[in-house]
Amino acid sequence: MNDHTTDGPVAPEPEGSRTDCSEALLRVYEYLDGELGPDECAKIQAHLDECGPCLKEYDLDTTLKSLIKRSCESEQAPETLRLTIMSRISMTVIQVEGH
Image (cartoon, rainbow, N blue to C red; front, side, top):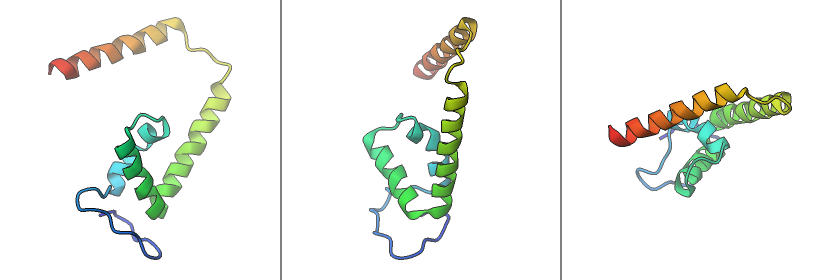
């Protein structure tokens, strides 16, 4: 069940498939970046379709991401920063896989 009320009828979702506001907002950047699978994408989209406050937050995040992209388009991250980030990502993946 989501945390906000909606105006008008909402099609019922199967039990266990409903996405609450905290999950939707937590995963909104993954959704924006196309990092979710089709099922997760559909859940987030369904939640945004029925939840005005989350849709408003999504719209704000979309605008912010576009502004940052436009402002930094000509900027290139220093190579050392890129290498540090990629190294940390690799360490995180290894730690998660190895527990």
